[in-house]
Length: 110
Image (cartoon, rainbow, N blue to C red):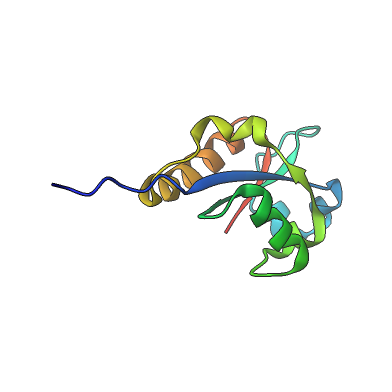
């Protein structure tokens, strides 16, 4: 009997402080950013998103933008997708980032 994929991976979105826009690298990656829209980081994890956010803020396997500018999780942008198998989470991380950019968000992805 085929093994069922484990549904314990999550995509998550962290809202970033406005100061992240001062970073030239972030600006270059968001040429279509619409003024007034939020800045976010999109990631995926095998941990609970709350635990992963805390690790970012503590500098543990952290993305620098989240460590330095992370404000809060935005479950309104990701809860509907979780949990899911690993491959689906990998794909959803990319798709969610693209969708948010299309809506005018400033987005950073690992």
